[in-house]
Structure formats: structure tokens, C-alpha cells
Image (cartoon, rainbow, N blue to C red; front, side, top):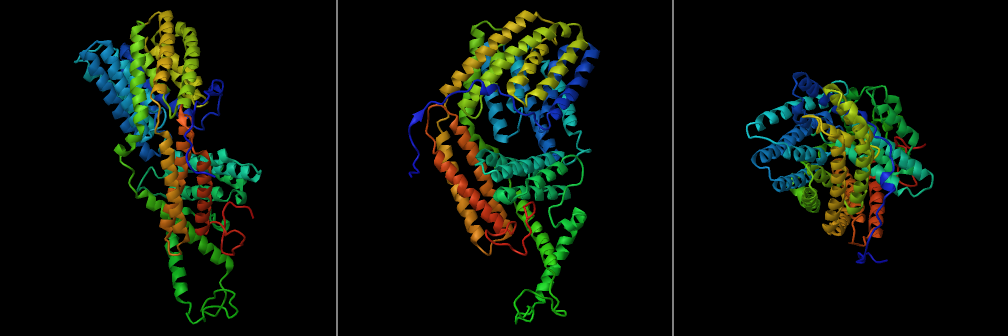
Length: 623
């Protein structure tokens, strides 16, 4: 069996029907949907009351920031939202200043394309999450083609900033009611994913997809829990214990109890008490009481150990086990197990604390790998805008935004997004044609239609991008009518033409700028996994390894496995790419999973194969 990477190249088939299939809605689809309505409505209704609805596009730019960071803990969400608002204001400022200095459409398209590339690269590097760069590109591109004077720019920016502050307040509003809501949801998803993999393993199926999804969910849960560094809390520590139990289930799926994992996931949601993962007889004790007592328990065990005589008087003559020196009574096995569980739970969190103290990678180090996507965005957006201008379009930014929205991790996903965008926009213009007569009844009707489209877009986009685009398209068209009503037929025709031009030219640019480094990234990811696995194996085999070192090695290997799968999936969708080392990827994943299981056993969370340890208590495992 050769491990060399094949060099043959081939073209991959592009899906059409599969790109339009509907998935399950997000568990929290209503949160961004309600947030954007709450953020858009007050500024728009206020401007309508003042008779200045023509200024609503500027306030809407700030209000749309409420769509971001719904998966982040609130302390982290506050920072992310602030940076998103600042980024939106920066792009809007460049667009407004450019619009005030020149009316040359070619120059404006060029500025919009460069802004789109920068916004895409920064959003990907910071992993800001959905809707990522698309909203920022829409805001800045639309502003480029709104006539401005230099004196108007500060006022328009002030409106956007004020709406952005309101959007920040809307995004942070649930914090007093559910201070750990995002962490609870991420933990529940990790538990459910681990349970699904355990069910697959019990059914005798291969379950590679379920395993990858479970590892990704657990990795995402850790990212959420560790997003707030140096802010430990009792609730977060309890959630970390549950995520560790999900990792235990991944290490030994045949021994895991899916029903219990699902039960924990259901209990974590909401605002109820977080389930315990230690000795069931101690589940009625409070988490804070347990944490306060950990040191006392450990000190007691240490003093007890000091009382054991090295000459053997501290042991039973028959060698059956340890005994107390005060009268020779044997320690109760359940007491030993309970004390051991307490120490193991404490040790489990040592590595978590160590990882929380590690500073994240600097932003500049994450931008280098995004060069192909940034070049695709700049080239595709510019060419789409130029082509739209050549056809006489009045709003070339529609084609520019269409091209910007296409680019995904690889050509296959980009093609799927192009199909979704075209289908969604074509259906959306039909919806706009039906809604336009109602919206033109008056300012209030127009604002209500915009709010309905905002809600519908966020409610549906989680099932499939094209379904959300059905509402995004009439929303974009209705926004153009805020300064004044326009002929419906012209808007529909322009939107259809710009959508087709943007999708076609944008995809051609994606094909022209192939990510030829994808294969080399897979090789590097394989090397990273191999090194992480070897390091974890060495640490697990070393009897003197500290809990922090073992936990850090295990977490590093798990993250490397998740990154390998994501890198391999992204590279698999590139055109004219040399054949990938799929066999090596699978073998590397299997070896890494075995090493992860060994590290979990080394921590005492699972018994060694073929043994039934009296002092090992495996939470969530079948008896």
C-alpha cells in the first residue's frame, strides 16, 4: 500500500438538484429572526414618523448587525458585535466618501470589489460566523451608488452608528434572562451528536459521517466554552464536564449510553439545573458546594495517604487493599470510588483551564491561507460589476453582491451556492411582484413588508440558502423604494439580469482562480495530525504526565482531527485538483481516534480494555 499522493487530475461532477434540498431548521432560527426585526423596527418607524424614511437605508445598515454572534457567549458576543459594528461603519465610510468624490461607475465598482475581498478575508480569518461578509458587502456596495455630498457623510454615518448601538443592545438583551444560553446550546448539540454516533456504532454501521459530525460538534462546544477566557463560573465548569462526557462517548461509542446523553442534552437546554456527571448519590449536592469542597477532599486524602506506614502496616496482611491506621478498618470501596471521581473531575478541568490561558493565534497569521478566496472575491466582484455596467444596468452593485455571495471553500460549494442564489432570486422577484402593490399603499405598509421579509429570510435561510433568498430578494428591492416608489417592472428586470450576470461571471472567476494549494494543505494537515498523535501517545505513556499536559495533548489532537476533516472536505471540491490521499486521511483519522481513546483511558474515565476496575466509574456508559 503506497502512501504517496497520486498526481492524476480529474474534474468533479457539480450537483444541481442536491443543492436545492432542504435541511432541518436551526435550533435557534427564531433568535436572529426576532433580533433583526427588533433592531430594524424602532429606527425605521421613528424615521417614518419624522417623514424621513429616505434615511432608513443608513439606519438599516446598523440594525442588520443584530444578525451576528448568536452562537457566542454573551461576554464574547459583546466584543464581536462591537467589532462588527465598527467594521460595518468602516466599510460604509469608505463607500460614502467614494460616492461623494466621484460618480465614475467603474471606479465605484472597483472600490466595491476591493471592499468585498477585504471583508471576506477578515470575516473568514476571525470566524465571525453567519451571515459573515455578505451583509457588510451589501451595505457598502449599495452605499457606493447613492448620491452623496461630503457634508452629508458624517450625518449618515451617525445614523448608522446610532442604529448599530441599538442593534448591540438587542443582541445583548437576553443575557439577564439566560446568561449561559449559548454555552448550553453548544453543549446540548455536542451531547446529541455524541449520542447519535454511539447509536450508529451500536447498530454495527461504519458511521464515519456521524463520527466526523460528533467530533465537529464537540470541537464547536469547546470553542464556545473557551471563547470567554479567564471568566470561570460554576455553570460553565459544569457544562465543561458534560462536554468531556461527550468526548468519552466518542472514545468508546459501544460502551456509551445514548439515552443518557440525550437526557443530559434535554436537561441542559433552558434555564433549569445542569445535570451532574459524578457519583449519582451526590447529584443533589450543589455545584458550588462541590467545588468549594474539592480542596478539602484532596487534603483529606493526602493526609490519609501520609498515615500509611511504608513498612506495610498500613496495608491488609492479605494484600486485599488499603486500610486505615486507626483500628485497621478497611476503607469502603464506594468511598474510594467517590473520592476518586471527585479528583478525576477536578483533573479533567485542569487542562481546560490551561487551554483557556493560551492566547489565540494573531489575526495576520490566519490571513495567509485565505489569499485564493480573497483574489476570487476581488476578481469576480469586479468583473460582475463591469459586465453589469456594460449591459446598461443602473444598480451594478446587485451583480457585485451576487458574485460576493457565491464564493465558498471550494468550487463545488461555490457552484451549489450559485444555483441556490439564482433559483432563490428568481422566485424572490415573483414574490416582490406580488408584494409591491401592498408595499406601495403607504410608508407604514412599506416598513411592515420590510420587517416581514427580514423575519422570513432569517427563519428560512437555515434550511437552505435559496429558500432564504426568496425573502432576501424582495427585501433588497423594497429597500430601494425607501427614498421613493419605483416602477415594479424595471426593478424586477434589473434584478433578474444582475443576478444572472453576477452568478455567471462570479463562477467563471472562481474556476479561473483555482485553489491549487488545497492539496498541499491536506498534506500539512496530515503531518499535523501525525505529530499531534505521536505527542499524545508519548504523554499518555509517560507515568509522570500531569493532568494538564495530558488534557492539552488530547485536546490538541482532537482539534487537529477536526481540521484535517475540514481541510480534506474543502480540497475534495476543487476542480482540476490532483487526486487526494483519501486512504491516508482515513487511516490517519482512525489512528488518531484510537490514540484519543487511549488518552481517555489514561485519565481513568474509561476502564482499560478487558478489565473491570473497581475504582473506575464511567459516567454515561452502559453497565
